[in-house]
Image (cartoon, rainbow, N blue to C red; front, side, top):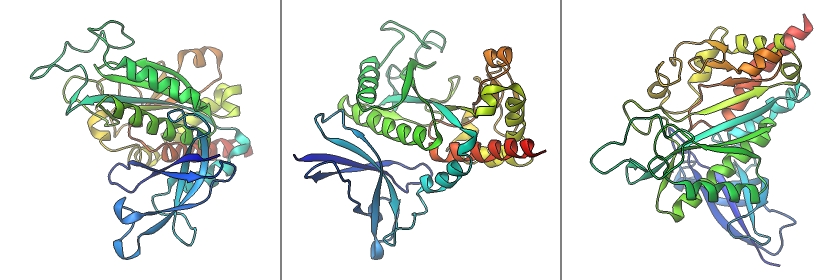
Length: 339
């Protein structure tokens, strides 16, 4: 049986990487071979030595083509099979393995904005819509724009077996969110990248762009983030570990180390307004959406659960944000256990 396998990878575009993909025809889907591509066309190599390798690491049913066809997420390798510098998944792998015994899991809230031309979907030509307020989780033609694309994307992700846990309209016209998780670091990141690919692919059919820009509309509008919810087994069992994780994220140079890798345009979004903390200040608090890290109210009541890092941008690399949080929090949690 002939299988169409859509090989997907992350390129080397700066400052924010893009997704690329191409189709390989296979006799069957039982074995997914390595494949190659021209890295000089993806900002990953020079023309005089441009061959790079696609290493399949995650596959799922292709819900667009249907049948036995596949989506195949790949790591990018050099021809000697060492990880390419743009291969951030390879950096996450050893960190996830090192702290697997703490059972870290993530839920990532992916915000995004539909653009028609250079304007958010729902913005009138030559003007602006009513101020934000009624759009968040809204209903009705005056509040909601692009729902048919969102619903189709959700159905495709579920058909692909991706771990989506919800969707909602966000605070600006044409702005939406889907959530992935709770899953282990590598799994949540793989699912997020494939879900992003499906979002771009579906939006393509409607003639709109799905933007992950951190501040897609200047002015008095919320930006677009990727709030990252995190817990370990110890955090799910007790409050002391919750506080330890919050304090670890704020220790020494950690806040700036994280923020600098939390996506392009972080200063434009994390201004201290619009439910954000300033990008260069760290804080945490219960039920506080103006803090860098929020402890949900039910977590404070039950004295166990998870935390929400509200700083990552919509355009953050999930392999990077999960690696940073696991490394910072799990290192400190392990140290405390040894005292």
